[in-house]
Length: 392
Image (cartoon, rainbow, N blue to C red; front, side, top):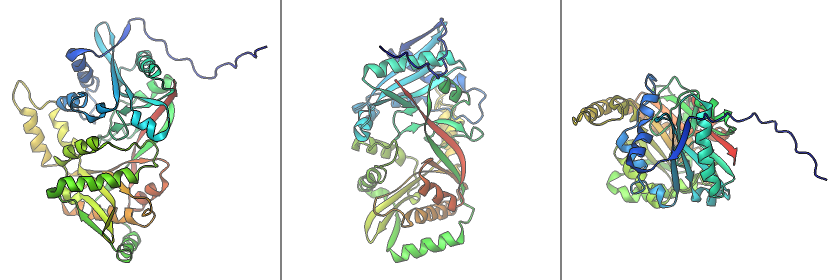
């Protein structure tokens, strides 16, 4: 005789409004609606930075985004009375599952009016697509992987987003949690001023280690761009292989990102650390181009005139903030002070170049070694982005 089922302790999911329909994106008109729905949604939010519509089109174009060479994406739009009220992407990343031995899909590019029922309709559509692919769990937001923008902002709404990080309206966490999602991992951002002197003890120990272990730090040579990219690629894929959520980039993904970064980087802030001539670590700090993008309001042209472009170029000369986007050390060379040396050299160079400071992001909440190192340099936690999960 079968035992009675245990009563569910989970809160019931919100009901889908009867006048809301969700359909997959088909054709250019739908794709334009998908991209443009964010502009009125964030009107009046002073810290939001409008993405360039041109860049978003390229990101969603399978011919221009190397993620589509192996991954699959289905975009959905929610409409009420013909008006777009939400959007979501369902994402299949086979490389992630192969690397971690998991069976998980992603959701991303989530935007929605403040209505948990509309959000339910979007998550249901994404879940149905992911279940049909055989997945048993969904993680997100991922746009479209941890190598791109990911995470939902849950703390730090009073500050604008740094380049290549997400910003969202504060009520999204409530919509997501109301639809059965729970926290999988938090990603932390740190604020650091280039004018603040690091503790004298930290600087002294770092210099002692530099001399003792034969550590040299040099800037990337953009004249040897392809060779330098190949070198950094090797360190990158080795340095994060055991981190939560990490997935190695393909050569095409890495090269594509490197070409995009080349347009905005300061080579003095791209550092490679070598131990007795062997490259073992690198850090990448880039100007926070969002300071310039904000003035363009998502458009490079207005009525055919390059007004946005002119504003963008003018504002780019006034960028005073940076984002330390990645710092990686090969296994076997960690816990030897290389992170402190790279942080110190980055701070000194940033100050010399006239930058005021900026953001270090993201770090995993459970990466205690890295988080303590940032704190020792004077870093203060400033934002939290959250990855959510739900069984399918």
